[in-house]
Image (cartoon, rainbow, N blue to C red; front, side, top):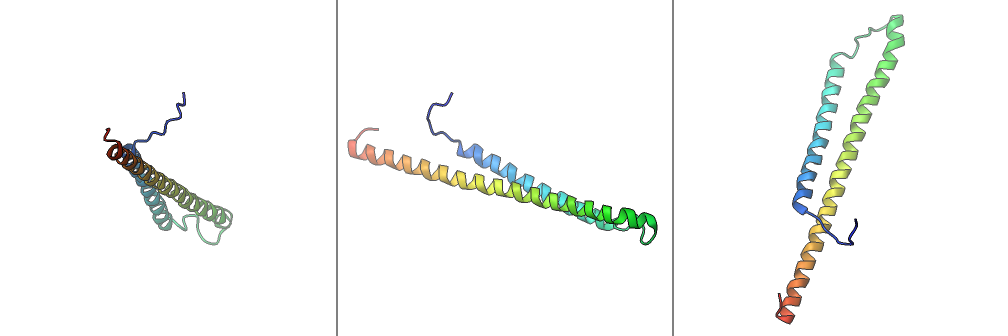
Length: 112
């Protein structure tokens, strides 16, 4: 049940962000491996016969789609990472400001 409290665990958020960042790197590596593998088998369907003319354009389009999907997924995960880092900075700034406000009040009143 929502309590109206503002709570956050910056340490856990940093750990999660590191995991998300690693996911982005994994996607990048997978896309690069696909491109490399695709180059190695680029003309498997032949060059100028009917089969090559039918399958070649479809295969090339599928390869472009896979590469574009990998790049888009990497960009999306990268954006999530940086959005989460921005949130973490806000959390740390808010936490720091509140701690300072509490210290200031304690100095003024002599109470802890």
